[in-house]
Amino acid sequence: MHPAATPLPEADSRLIDGPVTAPATLLLAHGAGAPMDSPFLAAIAAGLVNHGWRVMRFEFPYMARWRQTGRRGAPDRLPKLLESFMEQIAQAAELGPLLIGGKSLGGRVASLVLSDMETNGQCANPGASAVRGGICLGYPFHPPGKPDQLRTAHLATLRSPLLILQGERDSFGNRAEVEGYALSASVNVSWIPGGDHSLKPNRGSGLDEASAWALAVAEADRFMRRVLAA
Image (cartoon, rainbow, N blue to C red; front, top):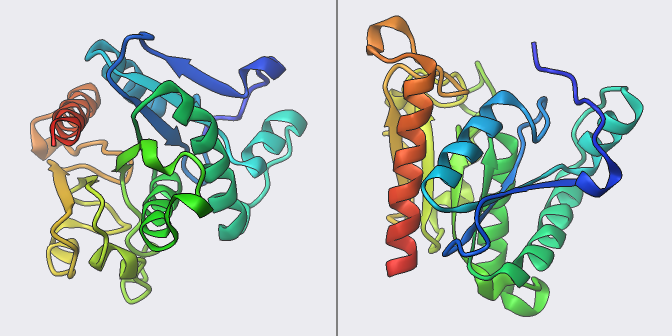
């Protein structure tokens, strides 16, 4: 069960953590059913802040409505999600270099934004020049139980550096499935041993949840440093 989106002060429509001197900001969107202050995203943000990064989390319009009204609704349609993400990029670009990403749905939208920026350029995407790459926290390669409904077409041609942190037993794309996909050389998949869609490991992995999330943070930190150094 996903935690309810508890009310936040109006001024806190985004959550920003980390030092103003950070070399870059990671702009993160949430998954389909949990808000930006879910335990998972809070842990990832805190871990990256400890590595010296700034992390900015935001909510898509449907999730903001859920928080305001207490009534859960379905995610917005993809064009609205893309528009919302691009609006956030335009604002966050004022902080300096950006990486964009998110949990599941949020990560998928971020990857589509990267692809759109490559196709349409900065004129159609204010703030695009600040974006250096992306990070997906559990990519939804396909709906659970529907491996033929792939969401990978843009990942085959993507030129921007993208890190996908994926649980080995993720029902949205497990290791055996994903290693058979034709992904661009710019797409790096890092596997969390025994992890599910929230990177939670099974007992056989030898990891607990905190250790698995710490591993994901360490991989994200290394990736961000490589991207900025390129």
